[in-house]
Length: 365
Image (cartoon, rainbow, N blue to C red; front, side, top):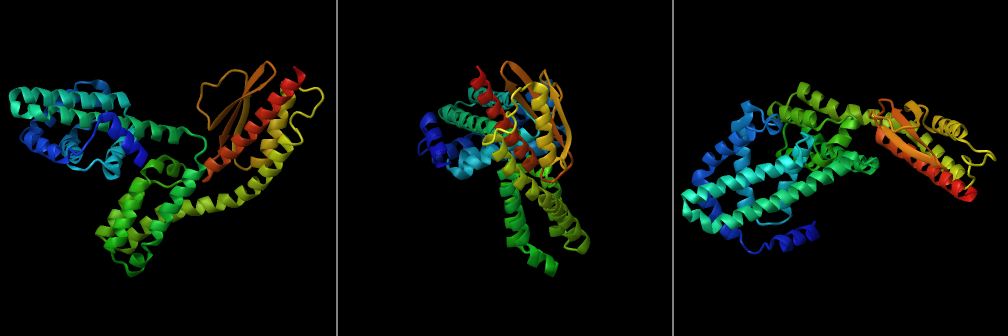
């Protein structure tokens, strides 16, 4: 994080300008409401952007946008401000707002402040600084948006799930005294809500395991407002039920993990997939089917092979090749809590098979 912040400072030539930024905010403060009215008016004129703006919440959104502008211009440029900007980017990712539309928003905001400076020349000395920090915020949001996209689309997210559940469960454990006394411990509540904030980058990976952060946060708020048995039960159920499901399927995963180690040894060292003297695609596919059934038959819902890349979405789609022949392996898992672990394990098996097929092809060339 420190290296990233240092790099941004170098690229945008950010110096000791906090006081000047605060003065800039004071100068534009009288016009902020007018600027935000025009800002949302322009955004609503773009149909592709308007769908992301609930009209009934525009006043609330304006307040949030003003607060965001205040933070950019009054906070030191450090890790705290970076995370503040990144949090907005992650929120935009989760509503599937294209980064191009984020850039358009900064463009509109810059144009509106530029237009205001033509009416009030006292803004002109601060114009360059304000727009520079808009560019900084836009760069951070773009960076964090695509970082979140990469995280969400990566097949190797088991470690992220492991880290996220540890954070969530330990935050939950800290609240047990409050639950037992049926009262709200403000420090525990603050730490729990802070942990929920830290988990936002893992929201999708947690949802796949049955943890819904929005639901957990809602029940947390309900208990904080009215500490009673019913609200406590709702909160506990939202955390303990998916955790129990995860633990149950983990017993089966232990067996699968041991089988996976044995299978990897068979594939790589004993060349079990390519040991047949006369090797062809049907034989390879039959071997793959047997291996996956032996290791993860309890979790696999569908296993299929295609000559062309399938158009439908699947949990895992893998391209394999033997000599000049290409084929796709498609795997869909059932509704198991630790789906990420299963898919990562299956992907590792297929990668090992891919390697041995390549080696056999080279040997026969």
